[in-house]
Image 1 (cartoon, rainbow, N blue to C red):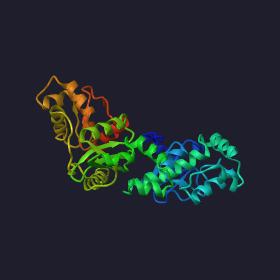
Image 2 (image 1 turned 135 degrees about the horizontal axis):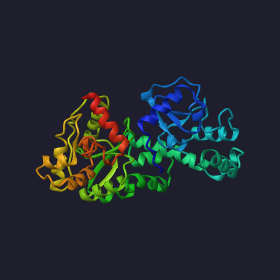
Image 3 (image 1 turned 180 degrees about the vertical axis):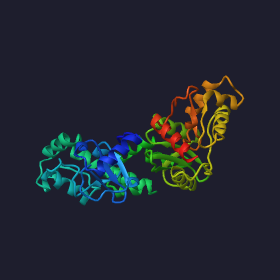
Image 4 (image 1 turned 90 degrees about the horizontal axis):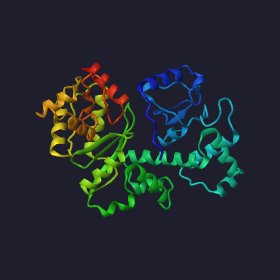
Length: 354
């Protein structure tokens, strides 16, 4: 499955302004998913404009589809502006009628549509074939069901994956383990996608504590999940536990500026030195920053700033263990697994709310 590209806060604000102004210069530049209606639109959609907090912005239609949004019937985001292709309309309407369908040649014949023509028209206009569009729509629905806590088997059947192979492949790319391997493990961790103003996050926990909280687009996330699975000798499957419910509620308050200290129970998995660094990170006050050198001195190892930086990079509980509060001695932000734009946003957010 293709990953959604990270948009900075500045770009999101720019896109929202363009949406409010129905700026035609942004046609093809972005699409907006409206959480309250479940549809995605082009920038010039004539419908009433949604509130900022109800918008999610995407650079491609496929990203919007994979996020479980369906195309708007008013602005027809899968057709050229002011020109609605009859072929596109027929096919998109057919997908919405039965989104779980796995398309075959005979399905095109029933609609009196040439499969090759459909492929080329979609590819030329939207940089994906019609079959890729239908698959993305189906997988978007599947991932939404997973986020809501449905089991793999239920989701697979609901979205029309008869043999499970297609769903298993897509699942494996994200979770790092095929559903058919679950019964080979004795321990089970649950994983859930959480929405946030900075993009989707992945939370993994058992019934007692949270093991991982990361932005989905973090580089190397798949390796982190694999290490976690090996260390805990667990299967990781979609689901929700009390710690996941807790962190979802706390993150909402944090992003609203109403929470400074997290209470969700966490499970630290690292070396004694890494745990020492992480525990000291959690002592950094909300709205303040330290240098790597200051952090090394705080744990009684003033010359170990490089090791401190490495330990920060192995933190698997972003925001809760606030490694974003560590900056370079010269005041520059330094590195951050979730991306520098997110680090800047978090620091600015905490400074404003402190």
